[in-house]
Amino acid sequence: MVDLALPGIALFLLLNLLAGMLRVYRGPTLADRMLAALLFSTTTVAVLLILAEWMEQPALRNVALLFVMLASIISLAFVGLPGREDLEDGEQ
Amino acid sequence: MIGFLLDGLIAAGLVGLAYQAVTSRSLFRGIIHFVVFGLTMALAWARVGAPDLAMAEAAIGAGLTGALMLVAYRRLVEDRRDAPVDPGPAKSRLALPIAIGSGLLVGVIGLSALFSDVEPGQAGQAVLADLQQVDLGNPITGVLLLYRGIDTLLEVAVLLTAFLAARALAGSESGTGSPTTQGPETPMVGALLAVVIPLTVLVSVHLLRAGSYEPGGAFQAGAVLAGAGVLLILSGRIAAAETAGLLVRMGLLAGLVSFILIGLTPLLHGGPLLALPGLWAVYFIETAMMVSIAITLVLLFAGGGGLKRGKHG
Image 1: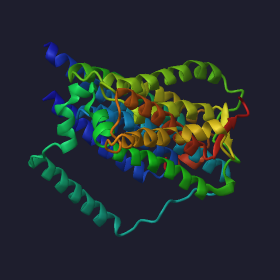
Image 2 (image 1 turned 180 degrees about the horizontal axis):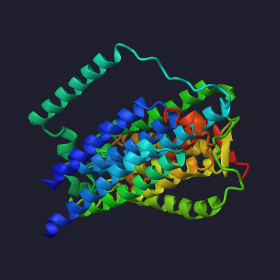
Image 3 (image 1 turned 60 degrees about the horizontal axis):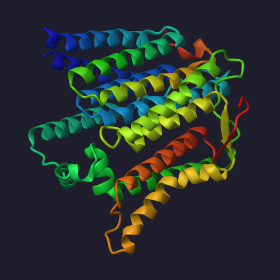
């Protein structure tokens, strides 16, 4: 049972990621896409931590650490973007 | 079974994200898909048991490149505030055959890799055989510095050459506008930096030290350290300058110069070229390389020849 728990949780989190991907795809505003991408990196951290335990690869925890650092760069690069929606989502 | 499902989901997600990143009609959407693609790719590397690649992909593929694209996007929007929406490049009749052809090529290579027994390279075998002797726990660092030192040396040289080439191409126009995205009035940025910058430095030193016994090392650590520099540039704490100061120049050259000097010393007493004299040399070169890689990446991001105090510094 315990053997199944870790990969099961990883799978559940990955399905969450897929839902987030849908939000990145659908939008509709820039901030929606950006927040979904940030949620993506948070969930990926969780998946990596679980994989580290399940695959017995402790080094994956360092990868997770790195992901946390990166999210701050992306969000700082995004904040203050001129919000010209019409230039953006012309297709919607 | 669940592992198979996981891998299938990741692979399907990757293909979908890559398609979206390339074909999105809106630039911003393409950029976000690219960033998410990088994160998923890192997850895929983690699944196949290559944490080194996962780190490099996350740091450079998603983080720094993503930030660079967002900054470029901002410039584009500001420059073309009143321009009509670009319909994008016209469809080419060759696109589909090329896509199918390259897909087949990748498929054939992948399949043949699956069905052939590849012997590990000589350097890999050698380093696994005497990992205990050299007192390094991470075979990748061992191969990079002890058995394939010349390759690593050339990589550092290539990075420097890339920076010089970028400088030559940018010419004198660069250095006029630093890619700063934050005004001094943006709330919380100061607090964010106060927490994140020290943590980033800590993490990069941790990765560097970890490189000797588990995945990590100079390249990953340098990329993370460059992340701290990029944060400082984005928030206007430091800015691109026309020419480099002494410290920046020393940092740029530290990796290459120390590698060459330490690599040359064995020749004095008849040893082979690049035979590192001990573990301290590995640590020394890795540290110098980390600084050089970080400064090169930051300068490439800033688009300048040097760094100076920014307007919100």
